[in-house]
Amino acid sequence: MDLTSRNFDDNTIIERKISSDPVFDGCVIKVFRDTVSLPNGNTATREVVRHNGAACIVAITDNEEILTVRQYRYALGRITLEIPAGKIDPGESPDTCAIRELAEETGFTAEKLTYIGELHTSVGFCDEVIHMYIATGLVHHELSPDEDEFLTLSAIPMEKLEEMILAGEITDSKTISAVLKACALYRRGEL
Image (cartoon, rainbow, N blue to C red; front, side, top):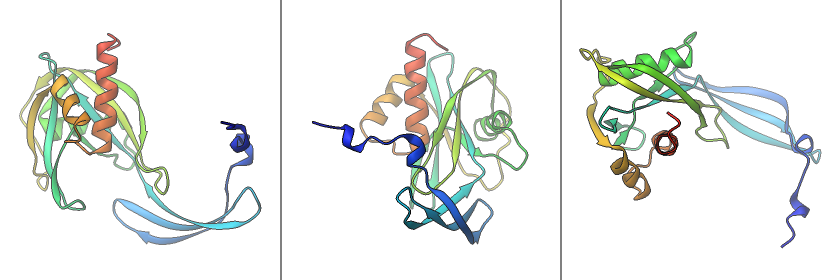
């Protein structure tokens, strides 16, 4: 099989923005309709969702369990099982967001917070970046949740959570990516 016929130099596949028109300006997202110049000289329209970003936390207990939250997701119309996460507030660093969300959603703080990378949620139309962290050395404090956030907290053994992901029981992309990465790093002894 010849794969070279579809190989392009990175500099020759970049789309260049010609114009950008705001379509929607919300509290969480902004939507733009951009006109771009394609590498072959044609133009195309791109609808782009802009988002401030978020942080998610794989909080691992001393018993090798991962803290999870069950919550209703209106856009999906169902309850999901996820790791703690939340959007970055204006002017807030991803680290600060991760620490804040862990405390708000679980009542725990971490002695150690390790950055394990970033996740782009939907590269075809959205610029959202989720910063992934592992939290260890967990210390429980009194829970101080957001008053409009309704969560059920649980601790699931790492292996069980990994099995649930592989079985398709968990469909949240940040949870899948961060947990599988954390489990791999943990098994390698890199945490």
